[in-house]
Length: 126
Length: 213
Image (cartoon, rainbow over all chains, first blue to last red; front, side, top):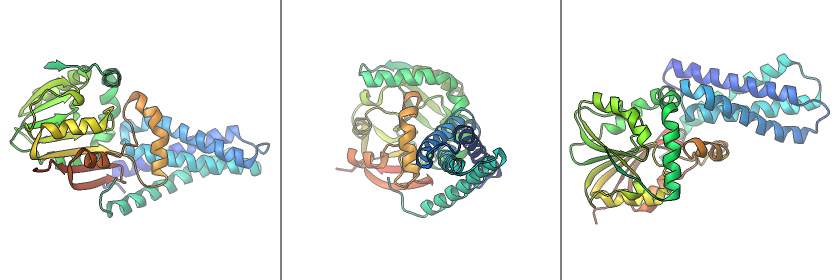
């Protein structure tokens, strides 16, 4: 994790926000009439696109470039996959969709911090 | 500031892209990214010595703040518009920075001239990186150092997937995200001394050397 509170909170905020935006996009698009598989694929693409736009247009300026863009795109993919699939299974409330999105974002932040710590211990390569 | 403008279509397109980006570049990249990377850039640029030094792609001069004081160097960039924004930062620097609008593929410097060449987020944008790195190899003295702060592709899923998805979009407005820059440096004929990962295996510093013979 970043050795700076500003960036630590920035990472958490950015991913929670992108998770929320991706989840809401899927909440409004998918319902029980959709095939779960098709919804999953479309939701992942939609979530990544939403997160990438949010990162490029707003979050990157304040919190960093690759350190924001990569985790938020993973967040967008994961959050929207979960919400998209869940929305095809049964009725989903907006609040639940938001919670799924934000929790996904926080989980992905932790995953990226752990992945970063792990990779820092490896010898450099390409 | 003198001009050495390319006529290659891909280089011209690259120049136009960065000319367009100049007005908003500091707004987009001057805060978060620079604050994150500043300590690592300072560490890399602290290796800047007293000999002939070339800084590639100075851009709007955001990196100047990370230079050690009182150095004398030449700096180039393909975009005259970007360089305009660098002027106040150059004026504030305690050393001397001579700027030229120049394309890395077409550098008129003598062979074996520079002791050190520095890059900072440069080879994500150079249209033909293999040729660009060979051009640097040519102007470096034998034993001269190439010191790079770059972002590259990743070998780890899901980051490699994300970088590959992003690149078609980001390449239109700025850099490629998935370049194998360390491998390109090696293939150009440099000896890699050290690669230090800064964020994942994506943001990194690379120290390489032109072989002595």
